[in-house]
Image (cartoon, rainbow over all chains, first blue to last red):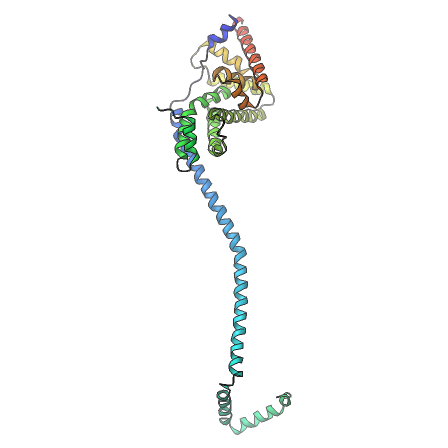
Length: 127
Length: 184
């Protein structure tokens, strides 16, 4: 009798499941899975973008620094090229000619001013 | 409906291309069993619904970490049971004592359960709901799900000897409670 009392209840349960809950459960959960998957992908893209942004943040100043260095070097090269052109002596006569022609074109008054300027030049003896 | 083997389902979930199909088959195969396990523990359908959702979200998250040597249903029962325990703890935070928490389950049962008006089933459930949490979980897994003690031991991380003792005490208490209520 003692044991019977539990056995008589058996495995029956006094609960009911709302209609359609278990039938729809798989579909609902898979929709949820889709959302989780999309969210995961979104997070992955964000973290990749964040890493890329950090990379660029460190890379850009480096590129700018390197570009500046090159332009200074290029400018130096340019100046150097000029000086090379002048020191080569090929175009010196051309420069001299242009200077002498501009002097010949000066008026008497202008020539007087130029002479007085040249006389007052403190570095004239060093030339 | 064809019932697929766990090995086949796990093979599908292993590959990204077939994972969705594998998860669908997994849910289809176990949803009913897991639902009733949860429902017996948490009593109300609303709570069971929340726990079911959390359980399968955890399945989605951790299916990659499932150890292939273990049984799939043991793993599912473990996740579901842990989610039920989490819910009990939350409720315990709301109710000030264990008795109150237990009483809340009984209250849920009296509100939502007892649809068929079978008195003996009602008395049985009421006696079951008065058990301490651990004894109630062990009793449910052994009595309703007929799981071997070795599997229950894996689900609850408890040794077999202690599980047998818990089950024995639970059985005695239910019987006593039912006999007392019969006299009254």
